Image (cartoon, rainbow, N blue to C red; front, side):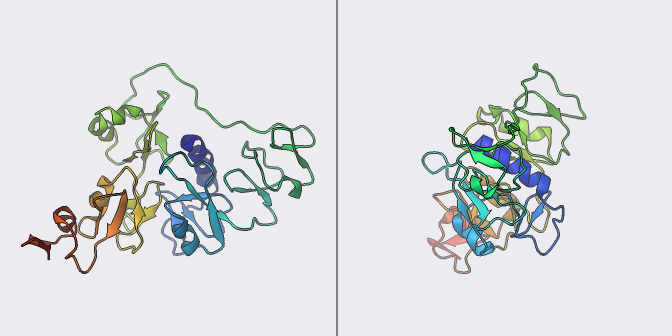
Length: 280
């Protein structure tokens, strides 16, 4: 479910996001895009606080969350703008003429005079226009990718290492072939998920090198905890000496000024020295 939700939200955000990664008005940023607090589409974030504290005009939608601790926090506008009044399933704001298949359990279908809610609770067009189905890449025959396109997606399609979009690679990543897959495109980062296919993405800009579980970029000096989920290795890979990941949980924390309560590993990650049972 997370893959389908991420695909819908991610593709829409990639298309609509502004290519201004160095701009000062970025509320959220990925490796290739910058988003303001007025972004009409949902943005996946690590916690409800990251959403509401960064953008008071936004709130959390948890559609797409799985079982256990696999929570999905979609940071969405509290109020959709007049030109995009229709609220999609994941909280995206859409125009009344939008044909994407994001409109099941739409809470405000009646806001659009050209639409109605059908018996399956989908927000359909009154004139019979069909909604577009979610894009599912066709499975291709197994092939060896050429040198100029060595990155192989789960469906055997080949891409170059400079492809700006997220590529869902083979789940062999979880079968002891992590290093092999990462070596295919050394300029990219692999983000593990709770299950299914891990993502291969371009790195974040040097000013915001730490990439979180939702592919958002962060400065190593940010005070808030960064949700890495199953990718704790990225904490030291990009912010060695400034941040650490604790004994439990998948967050990457800012190293404290007082290191005395850190354990030996945490102490080392924060550039301290563990002497006589205390980190200094």
